[in-house]
Image 1 (cartoon, rainbow, N blue to C red):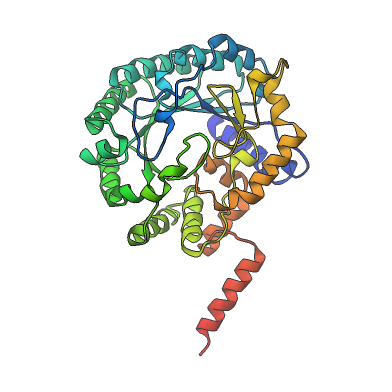
Image 2 (image 1 turned 180 degrees about the vertical axis):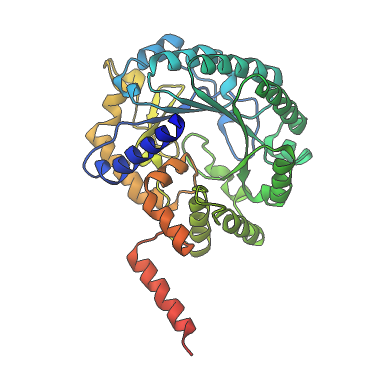
Length: 385
């Protein structure tokens, strides 16, 4: 009962913040996307992180200094990624720092490619011990883009599929000791279209939830613009992708909030309409990487580096800087309309509840009154003799 009351309270606060408070205020962030390291033991065809030259990443003392910023007093959820986040030598100490210095933290999610099986088992077990002690929910997402040799081809690592299976087996053994979630994440691109049904069957057979991410192209973070022509959907496989979007876009029940995003992707790819799915990075989420760069969104350029200032609250100074706020508004109007990222949109859709209700009633995303009047007129014309 306490859990239900907490969820209802969170939803009410979220709806108020997104629909009323954010109109005249910059919301303090409640979620953080943390790029823990750029070290990577994969050779993915859709990403160039593994090609980046080694750089001096922040020390434990630098992380400790950063976490003194009052900004972190509001953070409730942290998503940790890389590179391969678990390759960071400071991975566990940083987790301990986060837990110790962020009083409202209640959820930690980490992404892994699943290749370093024994390292994954050891570090996840340590994280689970820390989270259990501090009443924090833990989740891990393992990348799987194809079955068998296909995954090896896409990730560029010999025996990739078997390594991932071994890691998942180890994680399932840990589940017997600790309650936590295992999710499989798959990138949708030209090379994985033929794998969609196989991946869905694998997910069902192994009773592990699956999530898809449409491949994106950026000159920041993954830095993969040079790969676009090789992995973007072709006309031949676009129909299959649209069918997947359409299927995922049909709500299984009233709680299937993520269906709004997929129906939105269906309309965006088929009719070239602007994205309407709300994004938490425009409200109450931001990102920091291992080099000290701060981002409103990892798909866009950073807004400054923590190491370039002696301020006692460097993250807050960058996040609330009026010039940076102008840049965030630019992102909203010029970049978000064509964005296909699913990053943490469940909360944003729930808080911006009007659009999801519209989907449940009409079966279509909300694109503004003029768009839907135009659609209605077209339906009337077709219905007339």
